[in-house]
Image 1 (cartoon, rainbow, N blue to C red):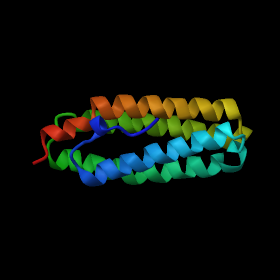
Image 2: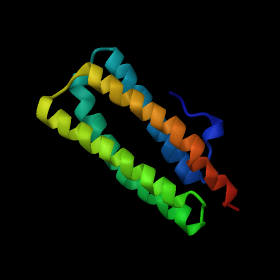
Image 3: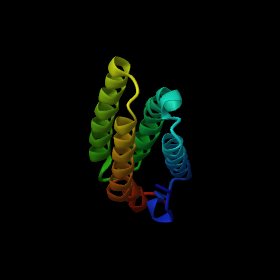
Amino acid sequence: MKWQPHFATGDAQIDEQHKMLFTTSDQFRHTLEAGEGERTYDLFLDFLNAYCEMHFAVEEKCMFAHKCPVAALNHHEHTLFLKLLEQENAWFREHGFDAARATAMLDKLDQWLESHICRIDIRLNEVLD
């Protein structure tokens, strides 16, 4: 999945962070398709964990600071995504790599990104100067 201009929030830092996530997700999908996912899935999960910790904090702070009407919903959806990520990390630690599961996680990430950004994040445009 590629970042699209209609995903823009109006905040350059947040948009650049989103672009980085789209790029990394796309690169990992290519890695999976090349049969190399087992060597890098742990790194992808580590990236997602670090990214979510950093990005969610930045985005939530921005939304609350600008009194964005969906700030609380944004936080709630971030919490749900973190639970999904936590479950995937736990499963991976216990069972190891599974290509079908990794692909399913990427699919969930892409679906979540498109849905979340298009419904929630772009609402920043309403409150940014």
